[in-house]
Image 1 (cartoon, rainbow, N blue to C red):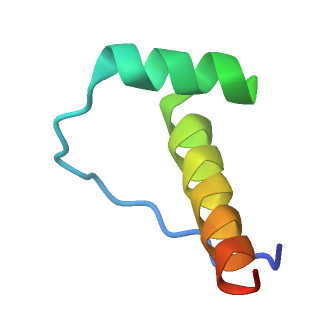
Image 2 (cartoon, rainbow, N blue to C red; image 1 turned 120 degrees about the vertical axis):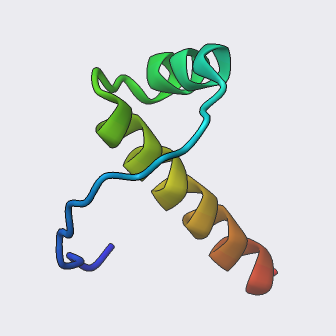
Length: 53
């Protein structure tokens, strides 16, 4: 996956902590940022695969 410019800014989002914890365990991540970025990357990759099927 190509490197993207990293932008940091506060984001007021109400997260499902249980779902986030499950995603972190599945991804092997230890921070919310890494979990959200990892899950987003997995989602985009899956969507791209579906387009080429």
